Image (cartoon, rainbow, N blue to C red; front, side, top):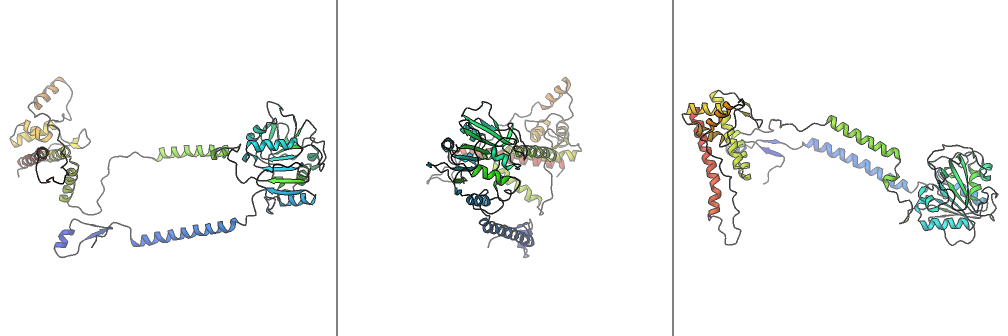
Length: 487
């Protein structure tokens, strides 16, 4: 039969069992009602989480494709533009990788070009010089540094200006187009080192423009009319392609601008890389991808949390006495402390506790006040206590001081510094026994097959000496307690 782990027997449990009555117990664990309530709340939360996961799984397949997907009819897709281009005779082919090995000129639209490696970007720039149109959507400084075409990302945000403010024929035909986003382009500080002529449109060109069209060989960017496939290629940089989506294609001149930029050739490869290559040019970490405002917000929140912790935090103070959950007899408490001291072999600590307890009891019997000692515990004046106990017991002060304080007798609490006080202290402490030697630690018993655990050795006798000395001290303190108390 095993004991219930949720019950704690009281000190009178053994006596009650011996008398024939049942043991008294106090339940310390949670009640059954609390357990049932906790299980019910946990079941409800688990059910909600399960339903949410099921809805997420079943609705994931009906999202309508990724953003800018030519097969998606949702507002963020580009199926409407693809159908318009096909109606104009342009073959639109979706792909996840950049096509290579095409000899005929065509149009290549690449979303998130930062996922491509250097060789692929160099190949795209070579296709531009061979007569193809390459449209890069969201090209940042990492991509522009690899291309080295004399264009960089602008530091300023031009806003959502709708006027073209340039001489590009496609932009002048389209008219007002609302181009919004976080990227804008401007001329690089080193100038044009690639032999390309750049035309900046929409926003505040050339300081910050949403659209940049670069033509090889210095030809006019707006010299060719839309649909002429025999003209040279060009590199088109678009900061945001939101005007290409189904939801914004009919806003202003977005459809006309899209057709002018993408319908110059009979074939169009719509490339949306699903994953970055192992040596992508844009290898920023997750923290670098966060906007600057998010990082500043997290830093401010951390400062607020630290200040709140300093304001509401409290230092660990002294232990606070609390009532026990069950009644514990004094004899059981003393026995428990004694077993802890014995298990830790804390003989010095045991002697100090015995002496401190007797000093407090003797001070109360002889009528001495208790004051806060150096250790923070209530202590009487050592000199006054030794003198009073010696006078009442008839024993010498040196014997009383040795019993109550050992060789480390404290200085008087209210003693004042001075030659006379030091002389009195030396006279009173003269004749006290010296500091006892340190208690020797007992050695381990031999653990061999022929070892006799009951056989006493010289080390065992040496380890018993501190125990015998502690027992002798306890008997001497008890005798002194009887003499002063008159027991």
